Length: 345
Image (cartoon, rainbow, N blue to C red; front, side, top):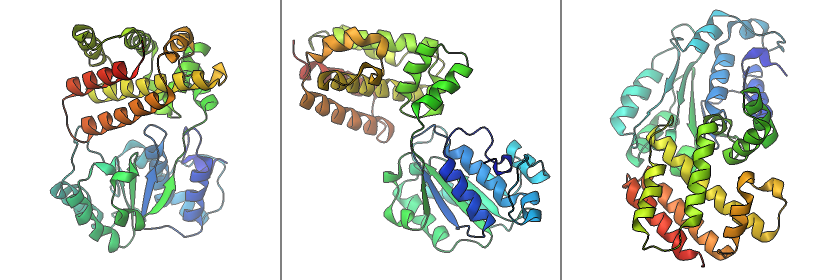
């Protein structure tokens, strides 16, 4: 279905797009939505398309009848360019802890202004999980008594960090990981070989945004890091452990946060590959297919319970780095020490 081009270029999520389209056409729009799902799968793009549906002049004129051609009304064009006065994106890049005053100044004061030229005032709040508890409690008042003709969309990849009372006041739309074949096809279109596209799509975990960031250089670095971790044998190799961590923290086309996040995910997928080898799954289920000999060798050093223990430790490492503002160097070194301690000879 074309949906008038509102969701043009967004791969997958047909059920979610259709549900939002019908809500607008049938006059069943909620005052608040929560778009949840892993990062990089298109939640924010769908939110922008939803804003176009809500304020489209042509759709209002047609009273919700299906549109096969792409809409080119002034409202849709302005939203595409990010200059519509009644649609605004709130994002906090580089901010770990969104505070009460930021919520009041950047969201509440703007959402309570009446629409200037559109039908709805639409606020899209990206990475809403970064709001601290005080900010979330303050924001509850807006969700409980929303302004007339307003729609709030909370976009989050970590819904568990949002209060239950926030969840209860939003209509939840969950976005599932994209099928690997769709991601692989998109990456081939963007210039990766079939093998590179396979590895990147598997490592993406179903996130097209994450897959696009995995270029040839990062694939080469991935190989070096996995081989280096597999070669670690004793915690007395402090200098070797430090070099591996320094490589992970090294500079590249990703910023510091994205780079650490990628390599933590890479280690998780490497451990998952080892589990798959141990339980005898088919080789096409292996993410790091080009490193299969190294993974098979490592599989003899780890028990399944040991791998689960490391994965639990890795989850804690992610939390203290990205939510607790811990020292990345120390946390990553401790993670490698945990891997060495858990592995056999």
